[in-house]
Image (cartoon, rainbow, N blue to C red; front, top):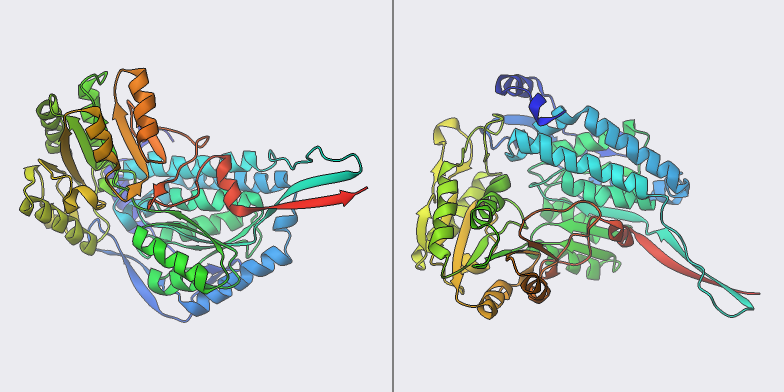
Length: 499
């Protein structure tokens, strides 16, 4: 379905009323209510109930891990030819495409993303992810190093075992796909713990995977909150690898869980406070400003890579700031189900309160509020916030250093390139960065000096599945996307045969 074929607002509203998501756990190929505890899945769009969701804990995690262990130790999945595993992943991609509208609607309702972004961006990403890793599954090769004439050395790649995957709510299908597709392509079995704010789309993905031919127990989905279900998964001695995307604070907990259990490998994609540097020789200042505004307000600013710190040379600071403010004021905040909406709802009341507190703290610390800074559309019953721009932000302030994870842009100025690099790196995070310049030497030198896993030059949030994604410093370790992601879910074994 192309964007031109996007259903109308009335159609999405009707479909929302007809949607009946299944909120039970998915364990060993079957729907499981678990111990009977539930929580309400509420939509930030309007505060209305979407579904009753099973609330999992230790017992449900134990059952899911046991199913994944049986499927790994005794089942066919790790023993299938890689090409056959790839064909199943391709069928998953086909079913995701077939159910694209339903999944996009579920995502939009449960976490507030605009229906246009859910349909055209989120679903495109997860479909492409399963298809790409399906095509890659049989392209890996083992090694036979050249050694002594009386010996044969083999280096083989083997699936690591049972994988625990814990993913957040901001891109519930994309980030699940970034974990699931390479883990399944490698021959692992998985227990997925989605965010309690966005379990329904993940559960639907799991059921479609069964329909595509994934054997029971290979992919299990357990709902529940992080301190209970997530902790149980992190501490479980039968989980061999755990992949987590979320906050740095929770990432630290998972490292402790590994130390306190079986020393499972922990792969972390954590927070960010990404700098976006605009130099006076930027090839197009209007484009730089437009991209800065798009980057921070896309997905309501609920992105770990969001360019939340705009670092602008003092000679062009007011020009760029005015352009960003103008775009922020023109942005259409509205019902996530309206295809004309440009910024949807924040995920929860608690999260909105946290974001607004950051804005108040910034202003109290001397920052100037150029636009936004308040809740909006209260009459609709949803959780909406105005696009917000702060300038004159102090480099050592909480506003400049902490991840806000909302539609709040902090603007800082600099006078020379060394100062810009120092400001950009003055954070505990190192996930992403942007740079705008016409000078190729500057682009090379600055991108190398920036402590970030991804640096975009004269663009932002560009790329595809061929390139790895992940962070430095307290933004985590390991990489999602690309062939490198498979390394997280495989073991290297050396076999030495004396001839």
